[in-house]
Amino acid sequence: MTTSPDIFLSYNREDQAQAKVFAEAFAAQGFNVWWDVGLRTGEAYDEVTERALRTAKAVVVLWSKKSVASRWVRAEATLADRNKTLVPCMIEACERPIMFELTQTAELGHWQGETTDRAWVEFLADVARFVGRERAPPPAQAPAAPMPSAAMAQATPIPRSSRPSIAILPFTNRSTERADEVFAGGMGEDIAGALSLGRGLRVISQGATAVYRKNTSDLRTIGQELGAKYVLEGNVRRVGQALRVTAQLVEAENGAILWTQKFDRPLSELAELQEELVEELAAHLGVQIQKVEMERALRKPGDITAWEAVMRSWAAYARLTPESVTFSVAEARRAVSLAPDYAVARGTLSMGLSILYQQTGYRDKALIDEAIEHAETALRLNPNHATVLFQVVNTFCNAGRFAESLPLAERAVDINPSLIDARQVLALCLIHFERNEEALVQLAEGDRLSPRAFQQVFSLGHRSWALYGLGRLDEALDVVSEFVRLDPSFRMALMTRPVFLQALGRTVEAQDAIRKARKAAPGEDLGYWISFAGGTYMPKTMFASFSQHFIDAWNAMPEETGA
Image 1 (cartoon, rainbow, N blue to C red):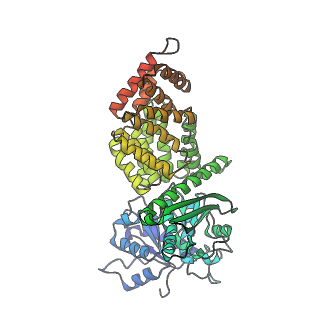
Image 2 (image 1 turned 180 degrees about the horizontal axis):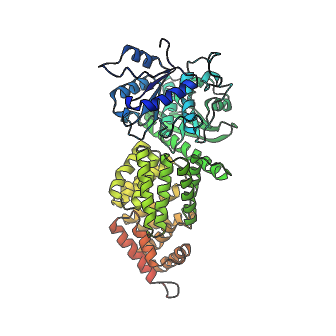
Image 3 (image 1 turned 90 degrees about the horizontal axis):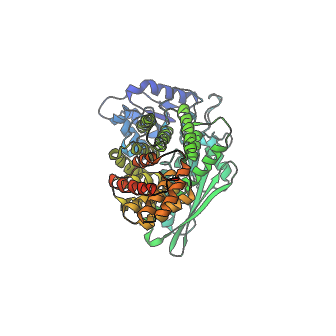
């Protein structure tokens, strides 16, 4: 091959059959593909291979258990990453080399060449954008309907998939300082990296958005050209002794502004606070998109996709009543049936089943057995996804597997520090191991990064336990009372409030609180409530005092309304 290829296909020789499927599918779309299988021997790259690798506009790396162990594939991926031509995908569940774990990677382990498969169409669009940076329109003899390149984007917009995609446009510098120009240039890339670690949001590559650095006037057109559902634009400017970053989220289809926020940081501390700023902005943005997606999924009358089913499940999970959790589990089952290899769907189902197990007083072992099965499958499918990890931790903790849960929760926070759910499950694990001060720090950081997230109400319950463990009873009571006020149906909060009142010697109030709890679970006896508390994250010492206070208040109630 004498001309520069559009695509260099990097794979392990033992995956040749699957590589052939990819090569033929790319060729059918009019791409020039280099994928010679005969140059895998010898001590160094063959001259022809290296030239193709260095000149290709997109290097598609097929990650599998065999390819991650191949020094050839690793070297090719490393060079492509350095040249900003890397477009990776997973053709088999495996643990990628650590340096590529934070690179947005398509999941195509299920794909067998179907041209209408959503994941394939989405991946093909990503490849087309890479190739389109330099690729001219195809010649007349090319196939009649090739995948559009960036040069053709205005005439033929790239189709959007059901999974939401966002384009992070280059931030503009509105000050005259060169240092601010460098800072603005790095913001988009850093935010894209942080967002790619969230709940399945597809972040369009920075290479594709770079062409809009000097022209961001028509966001609707930009969104259509990039196939983006959302567009984020921003700018930086100096305000006195501070640097202000302003960001705005726009819905590409209609140009509506969904969210805007200003973030100020002292110039003297900017270097130290830059990472914190990116985390905060990404967390705010993730919360807003999640809310919009959940609302839309709930309104959609039919033809639900796996992503939308997960969003419907999450919307129900926000309530945590027996009815809402049952609905949440049903939607998660639908997501898994539509996409069995979708790790977040598996994790969502596992978590819902484990919560049902908790709400039945830990009596239906079949629920937790199935929950663990889905959790372990999710972990195999994507062991380095922060959302999957926090879902698995929830399930494992409800099954009493705390020792293995703590390192998973810590890893979730390391991978995505801005994910409130990850910080919450880490706090619960810390409470179990009586590290209550550390738990409070995690909860405070999660709330700071994700204001107005629906998960914030759960932080109140977790915080009340940590305060109780520290003997700060008055504070614990105030916090759990606020939880009950915000969600009068949440059983664990309803049980916790009378415990704290009894511990403070306020027995009459504790009895009244127990009556309210019993209304939320009519027909359940004292044994149910103690079993309910016994399966939580509480350590043994906390559970002993917690349950005794509840029993004392229950037994002190008048005969006709008490035990």
